[in-house]
Image 1 (cartoon, rainbow, N blue to C red):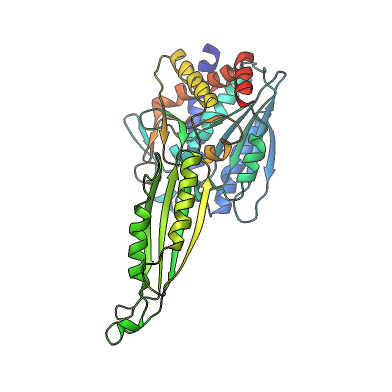
Image 2 (image 1 turned 180 degrees about the vertical axis):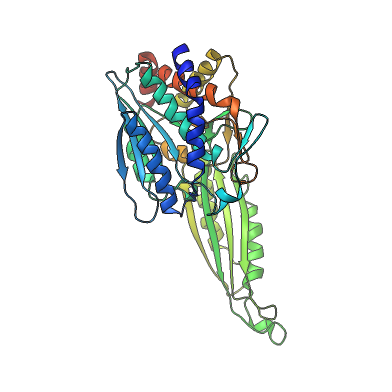
Amino acid sequence: MQALHDFVNNHRQEWLDNLARLTAIDCGTTNKPGVDAVGAHITNLCRSWGWDVHTYPQEKWGDCHTATLTGTGVGRIMLMGHLDTVYFDGTVAAHPARQEGNNLYLPGAGDMKGGLLTGMYALRALQQSGFDQFETLTFFFNSEEEHGSPVSQHITQNLASSMDAALVFEPARSSGAIVSARKASAKYAVHIKGLSAHAGIAPEKGINAVVAAAHYVLAAAALNKCVPGVTVTPTVVHGGGASNVVPEDATVQIDCRAEDPAGVAAIEQGMRDLAKLTFVSGAAVTVTGGFSFPPMAKTPSVSLMAGLARDAAADLDFVLEDVATGGASDANIIAPHCPVIDGLGPVSGNAHNADLEYIELDSIVPRTVMAALLIRKILQPQTLQALRSVRE
């Protein structure tokens, strides 16, 4: 443990220098050149450390990459993080880094350049300490998580299916807690087609799509908490055009979350039922959408891994909690294929707010060393056996 701590502490400034370089690149998800520039810096660093890098080229999105260390023992662990941010081009120039006390304010520092570096330097510390009692340690860098990982999901699933465990380096909660459960996430849209008419002369000849939309908003909201752990939230309503025309078209967008398969099934049934309802005679209704992220449940294997993370933190003299959250991440995609915990990046807050996103500087070293210790604990023969027996 002392060797790991000394390595990370001695390379803390290097860690911060790499953070500065990575956050100096505008890399919103749709900015392929920017995301690829981030990926190039990271993969060049991995290659310089002797890691085996493989690239998954993409046409529309940024390229995805894996970096793998091969050992002499048993046990396969997947680490994961994303290269993209939510920020538009120009954000970097408009929001230079600033430090206030222990907080470093910088767009993308928490979500999730700091997480990438935490995982990378944890692996590097293990490598430099001479630890090789594993089969493979593979870090997957995907490029479009902030848009739901549309092209990388199948890569994630294929990698996870051969792993004993996975660690995702999204930022820790502002309390320092890691994430042991995430809700499934779905987006639905109710499309209503009515009939336009003059709102003053002959409103009775129209079929008011906006009036219908109002009913569907209420009907969708009524599904909220239909079973424990379910949330159904109408979020965006579009409809109408000119103020003197009966609106012919309207759309209601609905955000849905569920903590387990029963909740997913309840929402899917609720949306099918919603499509059958008629509130305005003559209006045609179509419901589209569905779940893009399955639930990440706190299974016995996940509980075991969360306990090991708490033990690793205790070894470093700090207290760690694990929590559930309603937000989805790539951990949801991994969860059906191998046990996973998330939130292993530095302590952070205000993600997706270019002015206020920050990381806590004094969390860099302990969180990185904790990740390295956690990997060692997972790779203990008795732990690997327990994880495998639970899955069987």
